[in-house]
Length: 241
Length: 255
Ligand SMILES: Nc1ncnc2c1ncn2[C@@H]1O[C@H](COP(=O)(O)OP(=O)(O)O)[C@@H](O)[C@H]1O
Ligand SMILES: [Mg+2]
Image (cartoon, rainbow over all chains, first blue to last red; front, top):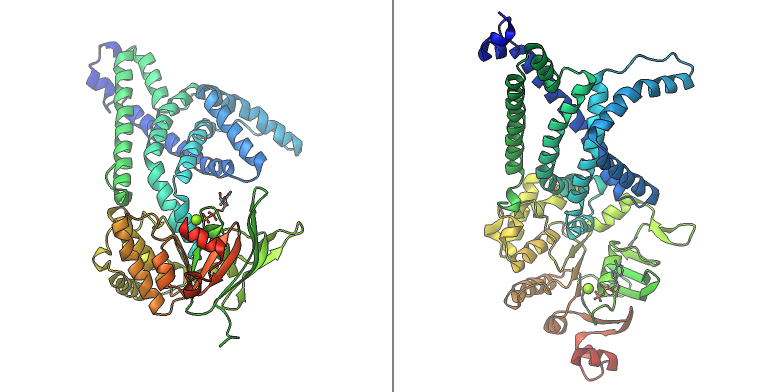
């Protein structure tokens, strides 16, 4: 019996002919990839937001330029650039130190870095907005009370920034999750890639793309539920939004 | 008593913004228990002067000391003042308190947390003690029932009374008020002024930028008229509101 004749539940199931396990593992890898890139994006994004507000002009301009570039080119291009460009770059750097060229970096690493670099540009905007939304007078009240920089950040600025950035960060996360599908092009067995492979080898594209859709939707709606919970808990002081 | 150390000594304070001189050399001392009303037209430099005293603005020139401790300022190689010791700056600010026109309560903290924040995190007071004191202070400012409220749930007058409780929580040696009633609805002004009267009566040292002439005349020990970045005249209220006041101050009053 060819796979084209198998019933859908058998193809999607966890039996010998089923792709269920592969699809679920793909979804797990997609989640891991998204988490890694979101984290990279948060760290770099926070640094960029801080740099944008820096009094050193060149630093602020550098951060602005980064945003213009990363938001101005297709994400796919960044994924490809990193995946195919990294080995050459690493070899060149190794060569500088007289070391042998290392092998290709793993697709997960270049993939999460590529999506993370793009995510950072968007998150920088979000953090910048969050910082600007903290009323200047409240920071002055903290200064006047004798709070030092760390105390001011930890007690006054950060809680308010978090309140302002959580909803837009939820958006960035959703884009992040969907952009991770682009890493399929490097052969990494995340959800998009495994559904392409399953669709191709069983000749049942509609079935597997529909299954992938359901899994992506499950990931996005679950994570927005998580975001909503965190938001609701942290934002009592601002009243209902 | 004349040679007692003043709570505030400010000497030769000058400040420019973008090449325009806003403060042109202000000297002011405040003895313990003095209530000094600072009057003057809009844009004359009153707020800037007050903000120089706790270094929310960095003066270009001048010296400041709080109860004999000089502000930690040094000249850099371009001759500009800068902070020489961030810790000392923090402790200088911790010994003073400021009440703002716009209240500036921390909006993500409940009323009680606004009041205990500085005692606990800046002064290292035990939380239970700070909470107990905060409740007493909130009672005193007439906000006893509001400890668990959020700032956004309060009227302007209530917010300002909480802000005053917050300022009192660290038992400051000097209190700076920048137009504390100017953002309030007329019917709310009194509740804040009455509170400030009671602070004056208990011997708090206060510098109050205000447009409330009755407060300046009845409560302050001294009235200072600031005009175009200088102290144009000053004296006890009886003199400043009497027939011997300077023509410029009389013109200001009648404007
Ligand atoms: N941060 C600032 N930057 C530029 N100009 C300022 C700044 N703060 C105050 N000024 C200017 O300094 C002058 C004095 O302001 P201010 O001290 O606020 O006056 P007052 O409190 O007496 O109304 C005004 O002309 C004001 O525009
Ligand atoms: Mg002012």
